[in-house]
Amino acid sequence: MEPSYIFILLIVALSIIVLSVFFSFFPVMLWISALASGVRIGIFTLVAMRLRRVIPSRIVNPLIKAHKAGLPISNNQLESHYLAGGNVDRVVNALIAAQRAQIPLSFERAAAIDLAGRDVLLAVQMSVNPKVIETPMVSAVAKDGIEVKVRARVTVRADIDRLVGGAGEETVIARIGEGIVTSVGSSDTHKQVLENPDMISRTVLGKGLDAGTAFQILSIDIADVDIGKNIGAHLQTEQAEADKRIAQAKAEERRAMAVAQEQEMKARVVEMRARVVESESQVPLAMSEALREGKMGVMDYMNLRNIESDTQMRSSFGKMGQPDKSDKDHM
Image (cartoon, rainbow, N blue to C red):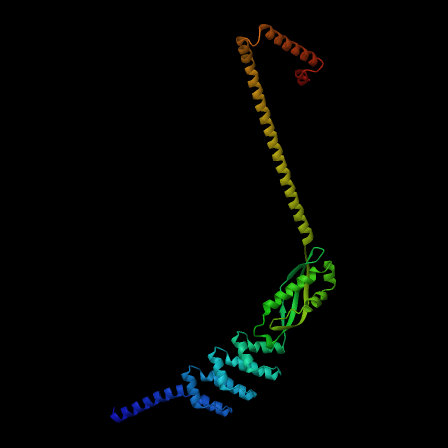
């Protein structure tokens, strides 16, 4: 191969490399597309975006859409929102949808909503087309003790001004459930709820449950009403069973105390009998001691024996009219 051909190949290779580097830093086609769409943006501005690690197409394409929709948005606003971690394309689409629906929405508000983690485009769509939220089955008890199960459908519309800092769908569902429980609980009987389910809707809707939320409640419709258990009777049964167990426990306590007292009395009687036997066993010793010491004479001892014999005779006379215990047992 001749040196001239080698030189030409090197020139072509270097040209390709230079052009690749040039077009990587100078998005000429994107710049031409912006100019053709009427968006005035310099080629060096696009290069500066590259240096700031911003993808130029993520800025220029939404900027073209905003310009065609007549929105006064600059590339600096879009670039700052991109650097903050926002979704530029979604914000621009939301602004276009809001303009078409004649909903007042500024770029700063849309950017704040997007950076707050909410879908600003979905919020605009919900402002135009309200969303229906279905609550889970809510269990409540009327004053007559009958459980009533209610499921409601809530029609809400997104409130653009309260999207930043406003509560979400979970809060709305929780408040609706609380309102249903309060409404059913204030009813005298469960039949009133079955006859007039719209009473729940009017009561709950009048409480202003959408305060502090990102939504505006348009209507609350009762989708389903069922009868559950007789909670009042169940509670009364459990209370009666608890009272029964308490009474049984107290009766068992009194019985145990009576048995303890009886055992204590028996122990005292046994102790007293033991003392009597012990005292009686000491009588002969005391009499012999008195005879030895001369404190009691023989005649005194004989008189004492006569008194004992007379006492035993009188006792036997008193028992003659009573039936014998052994005869009673044989009978």
